[in-house]
Image (cartoon, rainbow, N blue to C red; front, side):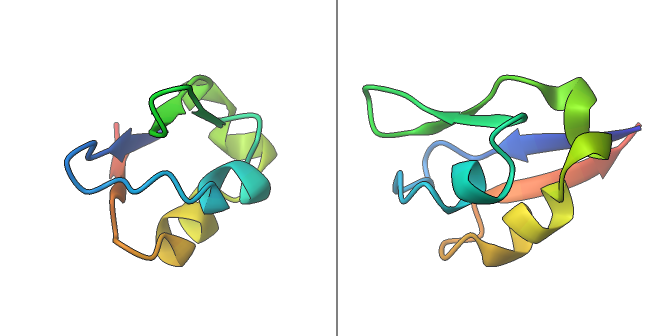
Length: 63
C-alpha cells in the first residue's frame, strides 16, 4: 500500500497537494499540509501530488 509522508520542515503550505488529492491531504491553520487519508491514495494521484510539490516535501513509501 502506498503511504504519503510529509516533511514539515520542508513544507511551505502551498496547497498543491490538496488541489491534486484532497481526499489524502489537508492544509491546516499552521500553513502546513497534513496527511488525513493515507488509506485513500488509490482514489487520487498521490504520486502526482508528491511530484508537483515545489519543495519536494512529500515522499511516497510502499508498505
